[in-house]
Length: 166
Image (cartoon, rainbow, N blue to C red; front, side, top):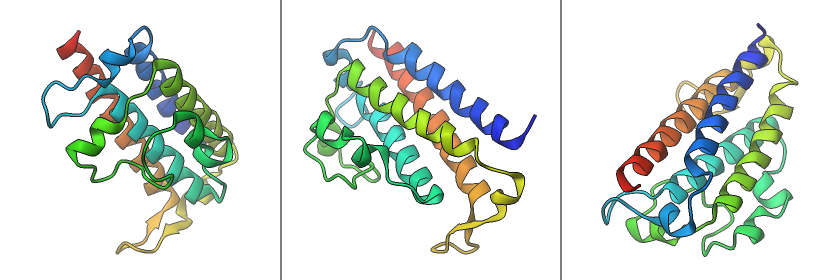
């Protein structure tokens, strides 16, 4: 198995979980929060998708699907187009109210762009520095694992929230 195939497999597993969690849920259920300070399924899926889109577009040198393909406008959230959900307040979490079609549409578009990017990678690419704001600087390999970890955690959280509220 090539490195790019391994990474694609990991992202495909997240996609499977998200489809299992989101498919068939109505807007109210997607926006439900188990407590006033908890995250909703809609916020978790939107946030993990935004992080994947933002981080991989930056690492790959391409425009985010959110802006390039009009998802910012289609989703119509009252948030800045650069917002990924990082450090959101409880009130900001409550602003993310999206349908299953919107969530999966945006996620699937990001997943497709991610897969396209990953298919171009070689093992040598993984050592390329993509973020010098950290010490040590972040390599592409570390960034890719970080994004997969974030997506896996948040998709698991979304599944857990679904179990709590349905």
